[in-house]
Length: 282
Length: 267
Image (tube, rainbow over all chains, first blue to last red; front, side, top):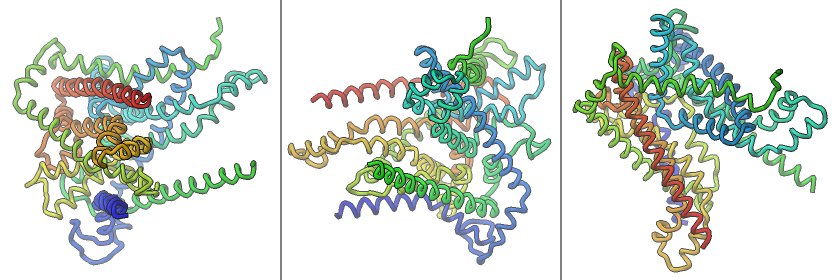
């Protein structure tokens, strides 16, 4: 019993430490002081100020656009890659598996620099001194970052699949293409979804690859693309986190919390439903 | 001849993508590491790296802070994952989610928040750059330790622990001889997930030490912002070699651990 209390205290203490910085930002999002730690009276002023801040809103928009497009492309490439590899000869599959592992284990800054150096190289030797850096190079960077993880999340689903279903579809007159769409894809859908989510969060959080491979474009027009990460980094290099960003932290925290609660509840009820269905079958 | 659709052709686009944007860039890094700004073969970057005390210092500090962060994360995270995964202490799965949740809040924002709070507490990067950086690293990488350790702890065979206790082992001895060996693969992968990103991190060390501590990542970033592609590429190459060596060593360690686990299973 004493051991259990000790364990619980330890768990909650570490949990508290993990959340201190975020909770402090959230608490000070209700006061307008420049620095965290100085309370200048309760107010909601930072929230309207956040939505009127064009710079932050543009960065937020860019971040979401890049995350959506790059995870869609990653899902497309990763899914086709995983399906293709699964039905290739063993040696070809192993080769793709190990090449896929390179970006997973590699340090992000090494990947970022290698891509940047390549874009510089191609720009100066093939396009005669052109500057290639734009939204497209940024997109390539983000896909390199996340497609391997999509591939990894789909691989086990393919291995769990019943191979007879595809054969049955072919025997019943389906073309290989429609069998793929209507038999294989629905079975690996959970893997595709979790791959998409993973790719999305990787892209949202990314700083290094974004800074290295970005150019002008998106909501910044002629200016260099700013995402949330790069904007926050530029701000905190000069001083404390801007007050409006404390309000942004609160909103992000609430969104994440809602998602976590939603997923937990969904799983809880889903498990329950499965359970009762099994009971009915019995 | 008409090309018939085969499922294995589906991996062609992904292959092309990986070759173009993963394999070729690595070769270009190697090319740049051994050429000068005019594109001629040169060992300048290599000689510069091994004769510059500043860069050797960066290498040593990166390895040191990487090891220290890994060790602290393991010391905090190991008992934590053990408590979380053991039904005797905790039945709440949601708690694990709570430990992972900070990872979904933008990491630069979290790093800035850590710095501002530490500043408020009087541990500012200006006076205590090393301590502030270390705290920032541990704070950021702890979830990366908890996740792999927790998943291996879930698979612990409790009957081995009970057998050790029944046969007269002290709780401490049962822990070191029955629990730790079973979690070795988790410890190895957790260490890898902390050590490499710590060594090559840029944002955390730059923000929390206010630019006073320069790790591998910071140096590569500096070379990038000054367009020093050759020296930058050589630094990246060194990092690649370190990663390759670590992967090789840990893969062997993992194979050995698996063998040992299988061996104990036989008995």
